[in-house]
Structures are given as structure tokens and as C-alpha cells.
Length: 278
Image 1 (cartoon, rainbow, N blue to C red):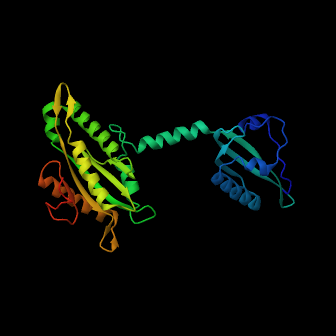
Image 2: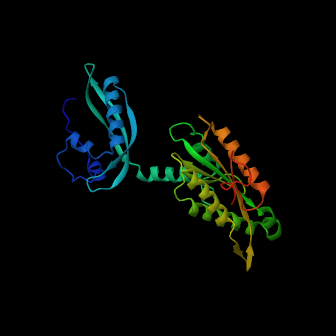
Image 3: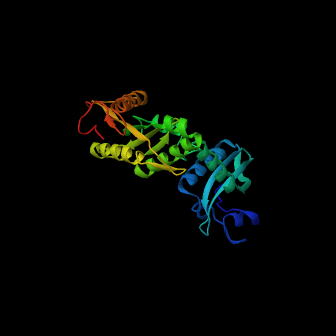
């Protein structure tokens, strides 16, 4: 297996956008693989040559003409006298299959009404608190007066309020690590570390103000509010578990709800403090 020459059918040349019949040398072709795919292919190929086994692998390439593609490699090792002498197999374009799977995964983590991240995506991201991607702050938002809108004007009006509120929330938090709808009229915003507490508190007030603006529906101006509870990722000198951080943010939200509409409260700060008032 010291010979690095490659023998391809015409279709494989086309897959890599290399002129048919061009002389092929493996190191040059490897340069067309994305770095992570190249490393994985090298490791899997080396293991197959050592063990004499087969392998199947999906890898990403950038063709000679600059096109990004995913290919599926299915290969076997030919052994003679106990030594590998040839590796042969097939390569197939699976770009559309990979894109379709990625779209399914994206949809599975999106709330269909608002297009924000859903509760599953929030839980997945939030579970990393204290790990490689720690959370600097968690903001929990609950709409005030939503049930009255739903009861008085119907579910279509309620859905519109949810959609408009979600759009305003996303627009207000462009730099957040994640903006999610975690319940009927409940939302969450994750802020990554490092965190500027003054900026987070200002963001909480901006969220409350933005979501408190009237919503036009059927010639009427529907009015809702938004209570915001904020908790920071570090309590004292320790780091919270996800459950502890969520509980502290939820307690702050409960305090905001108890204080009235369009109110912001921060965990650990007394009601009516300058930072906690909207």
C-alpha cells in the first residue's frame, strides 16, 4: 500500500470536479476534503488497513471548482499473504441527504408557531451550564395579561400575540446565546459568559418595554405586558447546576409577576431596587 496512485471511474472524477482521465495522486485529492473530514478519513482508513476490515464514512469535500459536497465512502481492504495490497470501494454523492437530515434536525428544535428554539433545544443547551459552554445569565420572561387576550379575543389573537412577542424578543436580543419559547406564553434568554451585569439588567428592561407595546389586531390595540426574572450563572463563589440556576431565575420572575406588569426583578436583590425596577 505504499503506492498512493488512485484509480477512479468517470463518475468519481465528476463528483470531485476533476477532469476525467487526469492523473490522480492521493495526497492531492486529500486536500479537497474538509480538515475534520480529512482527519477522520485518515484515521478510519488507517484502522481498516491495519485490521483488514471494511468501513463506511460520510465526509465533506470542497471540489476542485469550489463546490461543497458530502460523499459516502464504502470501502474494503484486499489482503494477500496477510498484508493489505489494495483498498477499493465506492463514493456516492449524499449532499441532498445530509441537507435533508440537517433540516429535519433544525425543525425538531424549532417552535412551529414562533420559529424560536423550542423547549427541547433550550434544555439541550441549558444542560451545559457549568460545562464547556457556561451560561452567564438566564432571563425568564412571562407575558402579562395573555390569558385575558386569549379568552376575550380567541386563539387567533392569542397566537398573534405570541408570534409578535417572540419576534420582538428575538430582535431585542440579537447577541444572546439562545432565545427560546419554553411554554405557552413563557420565554427564556440565555446569555453566555463573560457577562456584563449592567448590560443584562438593561436588556431585561428593554425586553419588558418592547413586549409591552400594543399589538394591532382586527382594528384593535391589544395590550399585554412582560415580566422578566434574571439570575446570573454564578451564585457566590460556586457554579449552579442547571436546576439551581433555573429555580433562581424562576423565583425572580415570580417576584416580578407579584410586583405588577412590565416589571424586571433580579435574583438576590430586594424589590424596588434601582436595578430591579423596570
